[in-house]
Image (cartoon, rainbow, N blue to C red; front, side, top):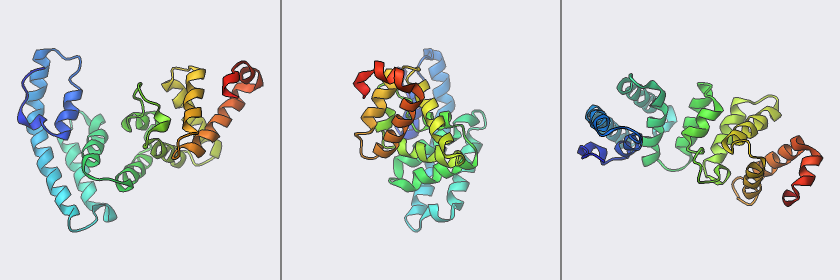
Length: 214
């Protein structure tokens, strides 16, 4: 890895660094030189936002967050697709609890974000973990339910469709993940419902052949 400017020693810097994978050394140097001043002003502006929280709840009115969003957009005009991710990474590094997640979910619903995109933004697409056991899985479920309120079964169908793709349409892997989810407190109810729905879709013949899931 190349020598990096001090700006990369930050949450945003580390996130950008994770995107360097696959770049040549020369490309990494060029990207680092371009991003360093951007990361610096982003961190400075974010410090102003966090100081505002010391005197009031910035999530109450939404003005501060809206200003922050507009600022981030102005900094990433060359790559607008990552604006939401940059905001989430930086806000999540400072704000704990449900305020941030709920605010972001409402914004994604308003923007009619694709559920598969939100699945990735919440980092549920990581291949080495069961997404159903993630603390953010419930937030994704809430987003999909708000995105597809009617009919009620539509949300479950969307959830299962994306989970199936995540497990590369491997029925056994999907079923095993759902079963594990039924043993996880936060996901128990949703996992049980999705498992029942999935088993009904597979039909009795398939269920009989896969006795380990009975």
